[in-house]
Length: 212
Image (cartoon, rainbow, N blue to C red):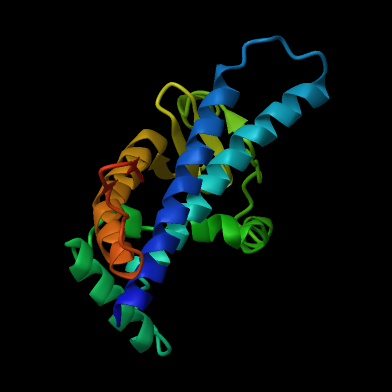
């Protein structure tokens, strides 16, 4: 991979980091709203806004994951070589990084299939479903004895934790990981970019001083 290719990939990861952080900021702003809901639809819209921002964060983090940790598949040799070079450039581990996990995002991406599996349950038990719930995780699980597989989307504001069928995703932890990754990328991206567009230095003369 030449320098130009490195630069373009790094800038794309930077962009995904920024968008993930923007989604996190939007989530916090939504959660900070305290005015009472005027109607059931108002409450539904605020609930939708919470999950929209969580989904947006998950999508951008998954895009980061695909660029740096694409996973194994028949068609992935080229991707793995590219990702390996980028990880080496940024001194990132080959596996085990929290941003490399995208199973919950995949659940959301294939939400229709998860609903199909729920609908096809044939064990004779009541098929309860909890979807787009905001509150304590104990409410569906302990208070109502809901099955984890029946809780499709859940957000716990106090812990800022998103759950899908029992899998959890901690928003503050992911935000910190995204920030740390961007801090790694920024100086590397700048160094490479300056090889193509050197930063102008102040020009000194006896008559005028021109700054950047």
